[in-house]
Image 1: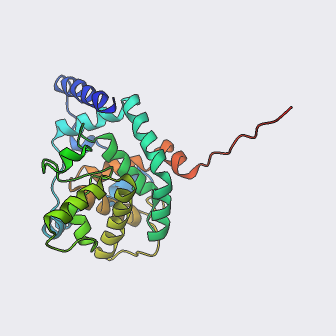
Image 2 (image 1 turned 90 degrees about the vertical axis):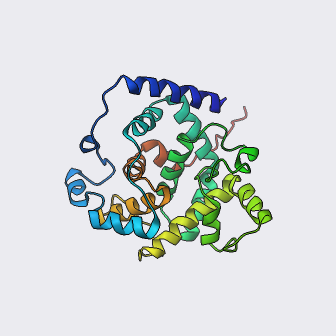
Length: 253
């Protein structure tokens, strides 16, 4: 049902997008930074930084503007959003546990998962699709088998059986989240960031820049960090992670 909803939503947004003007990149706002002056100071990445990141990690430029418009349109569809939040609630325990173990900001992880789940392609979570080789990234966080190699969970030259095992594992939502948190922890180390404390975008421009870099390396598209930093300010995600439901006591009369 959720796949059908997402497929219909994408089609509708794409048709609407063809009839709508596409806003230029200078109109996009990085709302998750502490304030607008911080945005000017941060300016995301310099040309030199982009070249270094591309050379070292193989990242790319932004999505095509039509694709960005479709992505933003998906975020406005309430049933799709509610379905994403429902999946995140189920993942909350593993998110909190793994983030506590590896000193990673749980809101950062939740924001990445929100984006990847919200914009996932219909049917890509099916095992036969995963093993067909048609998709390179799997599970809620859209992770590839290569990440398991980076984390020493697989040898550098895995066998066919090991690749099959890895794909099955990545389809397991709890394992997928564990690997995502491990990826963020690993990238923090590779970038020379402190791995013994979480990053907090609202605390400083430096932390926001570090989070932008980590998210860029996760997804590889230049428009991705702005989106994730924006999701990190979503009250619904904060409520989902930090609120606790109190059990109602039944009064017997």
